[in-house]
Length: 122
Image (cartoon, rainbow, N blue to C red; front, side):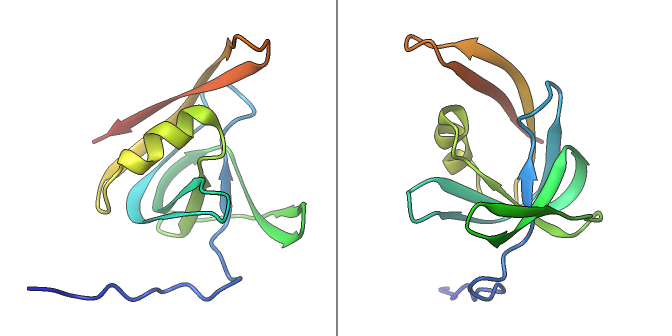
């Protein structure tokens, strides 16, 4: 049986973005509601928030973000703009309960630190 999935988000009215890349051990846990891509091709995962150790913000304009409070059950978005998340986030499936944790920085061949994340599906 086929079915069409309707969008619940209005263009320009996106859920808060999760930031878990500033301090080792920061994490987000939630149920995957949707998987999409940015205009740059970076994966975007929308989660129904279950737990968070990190920040959340909304875009107020190009490059301008404002910190916001979120509650359990609220939708939040995690953007895979970092190499490790670009690889791992597209492998998630809608309905998965996932925990994404910032683990460490690993030196790269170019000398820039590469951020490493652990992605666990319960």
